[in-house]
Amino acid sequence: MSYIDVKQGEARVADDANQEANRQKRQRLRSLAIALGLAFLVLLFYAATIVRLGGNH
Image 1 (spheres, rainbow, N blue to C red):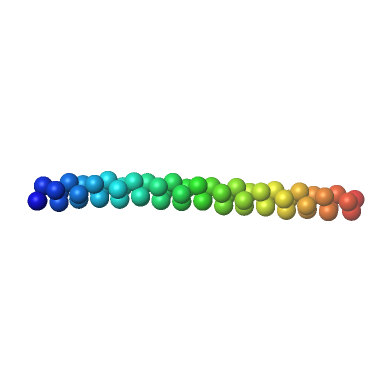
Image 2: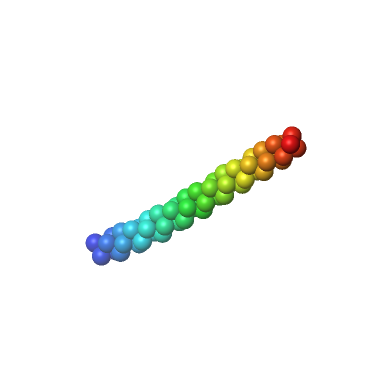
């Protein structure tokens, strides 16, 4: 019975490692999406400023 418990423990550790890897992947993708969204807003505000200032000259 002890042997089965050890094998189940090993399976649990491998499953935990997979879950951690998946969590890190989701976190990286979320961070990338936030960075891209922020970059888009910066460019949008920059372009809007150029358009508004360009119309006054």
